[in-house]
Image 1 (cartoon, rainbow, N blue to C red):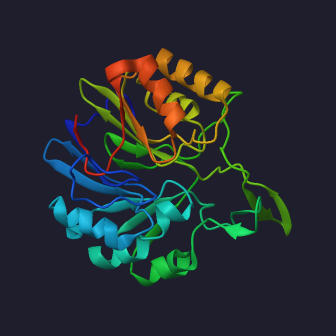
Image 2 (cartoon, one colour):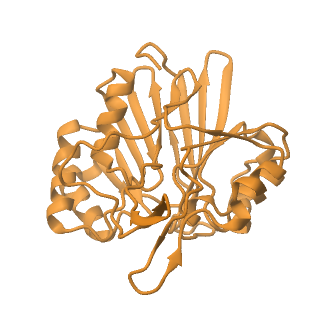
Length: 292
């Protein structure tokens, strides 16, 4: 996607998140899901980014927000975790379209677990496996590379890890060649949109690649240095004070017009973001809608 590939406008609706807007009838759940709608000239695309873990709650919220699954053109899964992928088969059945694209990193279906207290698988569950997705008639598009979804919207692909203070945020493991090893979460991808007159909008599931790494990667991919918004989870909930402060300082230097973060971000990081950015920062809630 070149710098000239710009959307006329972008709408983002928060369909699922751990918390809900004040007085909202929507249901919260541990997980996130966003509807990203891009418009360029007479073309429009509706992309579902992650599906949470509770498909009934997600579909309930879509109904309340007057969003039909039948209008979705593609699904992007930002990483393997169950709270972002578990509802994908139910959603695909509701969409009911043959060959609808499900875009994700090529390693998303690997073994993925932690064993700090007890052995627990936290990656893609069997009900959302590659085989079950294919049974719906969907077409999996698995790659480490960036994917242009429409002129002006792309996935990051595998994100370069450049900072010395960011990490996956959890003690995660995988199995490679029969050996247990640390899992660097290379499957963590995000959505990048470039809106005419505004700049880049980054939508992230959990930012296991590090939100500073992701933002710098987006700038490198597009050639655009202006950041309009960062929206999603930043996975700083268990981060050290040093990492939180360095993350906030680095993001502030990139001068985003807005950051809206929740899910796995954590209260301490939200406080630091607000202290640094004031009204440019807001917590993420189910039911929010952004018009850019």
